[in-house]
Structure formats: C-alpha cells, structure tokens
Amino acid sequence: MTKRTWAGLASVIGVLGLVWLVWAGELGSGGGSSFPTAVDTNTSLEYDAPAANKTKARAAVPNDLGAAVVAIETELGTDPSGSTADVKTYLQTEHNTNGTHAAVTATSVSSTGGVDAGASGTFLKTKVINIGDWDMDTTQNITVAHGLTSANIRRVTVIIRNDDGSTTASLPFYLGGSTSTEGVSWTSTLISLSRATSGTFDGTNFDATSYNRGWIVIDYI
Image 1 (spheres, rainbow, N blue to C red):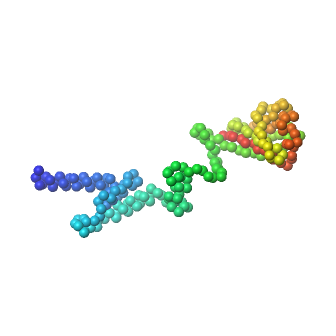
Image 2 (spheres, rainbow, N blue to C red):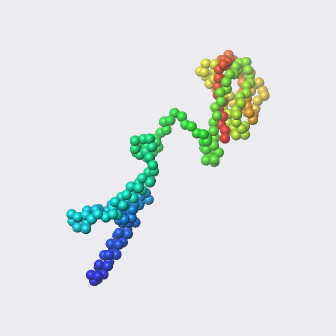
C-alpha cells in the first residue's frame, strides 16, 4: 500500500479508537461519564503528550471528571449516609460485611397494615383485649366487646390466668348454651366467654376480683 493509504488507514483507526473510548466512558475523551450504567475508564493518561515531558491541557479532562462526580452524586442521592457517619456505616446497619441481611434485634415491630402472608392483598392484623374482672368461681359466662366487624374475624384465642398469675390456660371454641361446655364464641359485637360447671376454672384459684383474668387475642382482616 502507498504511504497515502497507510496514512488514511491510520486516521480511520484513530477515529474508531476515539469513538470507542467515548462510547466506553473514557475520561478525557469528551464524552462525559458513563456512570452509573457503566464504569468509566482512564486508559489515556494525561502526561508526555504531545511529546515527552510535556502535557497539553485539554478541556475534556476536567469536564469529564466533573460529569463523573455529578453522576456519582446523582446515583447516591442527597445525604446517603443519613444520620450515620458514612455510607458504609449506613449499609452495614442492616447488612453483614458479606452483603447478607443482619439479624433483626428490635424489641418490637409495628405494622399498621398487617401481614399479607399469602401475598393476596388481604392483610391479617391482631388485636389484644384485656378480659378484665372475672370471678370464674362465681360467674359462668361473661361478654367483652370486640369493636370489630364480625365477618372479618378469623381466629379468637383466649388466655386465662389463675389468681397469682403463675398458671395460664386457653379456652376452646364453642357454640354456647350448655353448662358443661366452656370456651369462646362471638357475635357481631361481643366475645362470649364461658367456663364449665365443676371444671378447672370453677374454683377458688380463679375467683380474684379487681384483677385482669387474661387476654383475648383476635386475628382479623
């Protein structure tokens, strides 16, 4: 090939190389920054150009570096460390150093929307009500207002405790009526509790007054 052909080929290769550097996010190529979709490179260092011991200042270099800084800031957003000292501390508050989630150490968890255990859009919530005063030795049945829509109740659990609180037990579900049956049922407004005649709860270990007899735990949607 002639010298002119070689020169033309070299020029084309140079242009293609410059295009590749711009596309790849080469800092100083004049293409700004490719972050965050790609990581910038710095292949063409700013020294000994155009000759040894000489470096030509080019506007593309500080402009691309500035674009990279802005891209990083935009990706992180404002105040990315929150109230912690730095982003690393912020991330490792809930993550281990290997990226896995750290164990939850909170003493309580609050959720106003409930738990969507079946991912169906129906959230299950829980309400706890004090039974209040109930001398079970003297009184067989009591009722407690639940304050919910009856059709939304999915489960009711009743925890009974004895007079000194040393023993707890639960009442089963029942449909009511018989003195030999004890348990819990509910209507549109009330939770009905019953103990069986001559049963476990019909005694002096469960006759204290001015005392919360236990709790009603209601799961509802």
